[in-house]
Length: 436
Ligand code: SF4
Ligand code: SF4
Image (cartoon, rainbow, N blue to C red; front, side, top):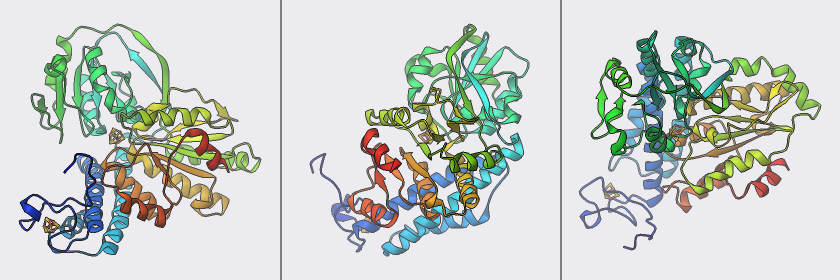
């Protein structure tokens, strides 16, 4: 088989498998290729839900209904259980609903533990002292680390999806939370080599290290990398001790500050003003631009897209896709910031809550709001969120920079025909269509 040949499906889960290697055209068991694709889609969505559920559970929150769905979803993909594509589509929508429950649960866990986020300026660059960079998504691990460095000369810097930590009152209260370094997850190798700090990875999007910094790298929770010291539990004294052995960093402020921490309550406190500005035509449209970022040239789209948007629109953002443009100063429209960071990927729930509240305020459905979703898609957590949006009946979502490999033409046809999914082209062309 040529390396570029497209597979209709790939399943090697049982001993009937074709040629003993894998069913690639149709299952020996009778499984149709679209069923295999939909099974993969469901498994990827379940993995995404599991990551959020794990973080919630570590904070003491769980949901038996989501647990039961995960069991049912996994079971349905066993050999000779379910050959019905319609049922797998129903399960994908159900996964979207379960992911909404899970994102709500995690939001509740974060807020009850750390308070509801409020807008916060975050410095970039370093302060004088030793340092630890923490990356991943685990606020609980960050909290424990901050407790353990309190009162010392070891400062903690967030990276990538940990940036939203600064919005939580219960985390930014720690004096040793010094700022944010770097951008999305895939700059780790360059960033980690640049700063002589201890490094702690807390969840997915943690990359195998370079030799030059492997001896100051640690993982925790579900993250393991060969040759990297894993910390079981939340005792980070080894990480702190390693940071102390490394040279002190200078006081060197970065070139820009970032702002994060726009929670549902903060945004809804401006609801009346937003309504007034929309009715007066001073805000023409809202865009949700963000999601999982990938190190692809085509992802340059998102910065150019935001830069080319007209001045009378507001950009909501979340997840690590925001680092494509969150250093830009977009100003405000009569006090409403034009760039609003809602937080991590799981804070998509904030976007959904705000969209629901705006729809109520204007007396229309969510699809009738002047709101366009421009979502970047990298991996499996993003699929859980996509199905959450689709489960709510949201249509006309723009996806990019490319669709992942398991979305073949048949899968894409389902997304386009049933959910009006659109693929991005160029910022100029897309903005013209989106602004009508
Ligand atoms: S479950 Fe069906 S499609 Fe999968 S390997 Fe077995 S025979 Fe092939
Ligand atoms: S938002 Fe997505 S791509 Fe970015 S760090 Fe999180 S899981 Fe990874």
